[in-house]
Length: 247
Image (cartoon, rainbow, N blue to C red; front, side):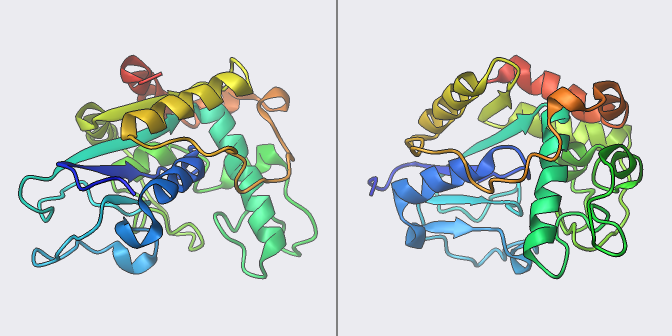
């Protein structure tokens, strides 16, 4: 386990942005007992000022941006990954199919399956009606998603120019940013994740294949223009992340 140091890796796990591989790297490096994991719903609420942090790293979907409760002299090393909206939207749909197959209670997006739960609804129809197929990275970073990522409850959210401005500020303030580029092949994106992990001071695991979802759709068989029309803010985020990308 790494020695105590003056920086604390903080991984903001933006959903469906290759975060599981990074989370595994952090666990392998520091040990589960030394990590503050902010994935459970109860960790959404602000951590009280009297909280005593004894860990080595922080990660999760619900990590607060304000980390004033870190011990004196410990500097947060804030890191996040932004994924191109086209492959991310395909991944979100595929993951919704997987989780709906695995559970009697649909997760991530209750509109993935038809009402009889016989088969997934067509991707184009899902894209048109799903609450979470539109601007969800912007909403996530701007805290516009209900409790950040409570997708199993179809609670509406709204994004605006102010949401985009807040999300852009997060991108600008982050210490390590990766714009995941999957257009250049799997090996390139694996190399990007390895560089991101190295910047965090951890080693990429042997595999990045977590949550292996059925490939119902992929970027090669969907309407890119329709996805981008629903995710203009998210595309701006990706472009901003690309300008600062560690790899």
